[in-house]
Length: 407
Ligand code: UDX
Image 1 (cartoon, rainbow, N blue to C red):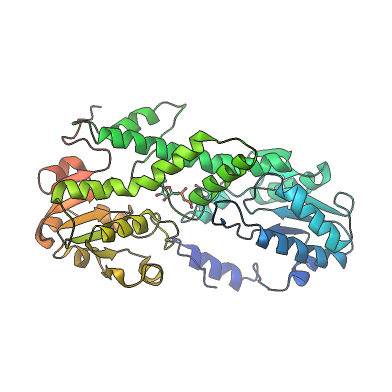
Image 2 (image 1 turned 180 degrees about the horizontal axis):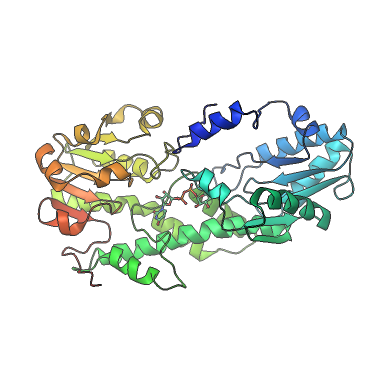
């Protein structure tokens, strides 16, 4: 009844389905396969050191499901939901399940690959109302079986796209890489705006987002993308592409921009303070994005490492990710229990995650609490018009004097 990650409303929902006995958990794969018609494989596919995908959990699951299927009569559908490089379901999962079950894919059991597009922090909402569902199918019967399940669940309201296994696998990488590239693109524009007085990337993003061909989503400039998916998936697609002798320069560039993006905030702090050695810097936000306590690949952690290297004294606060950070970041930094106590006595504040509660902070709070009210908005949560005259303000993608937005 306790979810491993924070998400608004998730714990209550989980308790409800456990209490109503609509969700049971077991560590016994045999029992799970015997008492169901469809098995979704949702295990992790982490990166290896070189960025390529580590398939050990997929392989082990396929083996366990195969062993269980050996004892089962009747048709059973296996669906890979984990993010896997094109070819994995057909060339790795299928032969392993066949070997350990002694059965043939097609007549005896079905096989599909259906990529997962949910976001952390809004997983429930995204699951209930996806933009579309993609079904990659080994054969027609497999696809029909999965489509029936989704139709029952969604009542036929969600578009379903059917294709082969490898194309479905590719859609997930293309989807995440496109979104990551879109963010790296706007961050590149932000970094140019930074050098052009009067320009503001927020206004640029708003204007170009009104073009239907571009759309406004995933066009927020900031410290870059983190989390358990974008960095891992872009690296995995790049590595896969290289293995096919194609360099995929656009993916490489998206990663390069992202790796350097947290340093933009360090640059802005240096512009305001000169050397950061011995300076007390307050970092607001540690989670890789708001509404989660997940700090995997968080840009805040990269930012903090860079600040420590500059000799700054870092104090950090996050509404939900303090425990995770204490375990991960260790002793080099101090932690505060509130945004206000984090700001107290600091000479510079950098916003690293756009939590709602930070939007409520007023310029006067920074002035009264900080030793020097230098505010670097790394996630564009504050209105430059309100902050500009009252604190020493800088923000990602904001050339010195803010641009006027006209209706
Ligand atoms: C992502 C994909 O969105 C989802 O479809 C996939 O299934 C898993 O990976 P998630 O990692 O949970 O989801 O978070 P997302 O909301 O996509 O944000 C990823 C990162 O991009 C965060 O660090 C966020 O701060 C950053 N981001 C997002 C921006 O910097 N700007 C934006 O405009 C949007």
